[in-house]
Image (tube, rainbow over the protein chains, first blue to last red):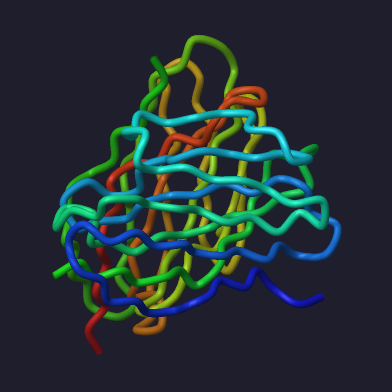
Length: 112
Length: 111
């Protein structure tokens, strides 16, 4: 089975811009979660989607949004980028039943 | 709310040394507990898990026992190798709720 795919792997954006990140899950996985990883804060949960519905949401401002498509692929959008949004954004997918999740390699976002 | 606390790093050990990384948790119910490992430049990989009290998860020589009485899930390995150098994350999930991760412990093993 192919693993979790995240695109792009690296991004450089300017403050005020917006960005869209993509995550393609392992075949058969219907749950997709997004995390922000920074050296100071560790892994912070953003949100989880299951069968196109947001199931859980973390404590991030409304500038962070996501969605999931019928093929389980998910996108995450960040609007009005701030310097503090620079981070590694990780996507994790699961079958929704076993509570296990499998992580992608991440998208490294740098905001200048 | 739920949370995970793990020991601060970084940890530096010589090859073949014994490893312990402490992890304690706070949860309202009966969570499943996990250890994930992140190698440089990669995403997290599931290392081991335990779903109920007294369960022992094990993989690649690593072990952790779910201790409900002490709300702990310490990671141990009897003899570390250079290839074990990575960041280790303790995590919990309660029911269908979100995962909660510790801040990570960086391990460096020197030959």
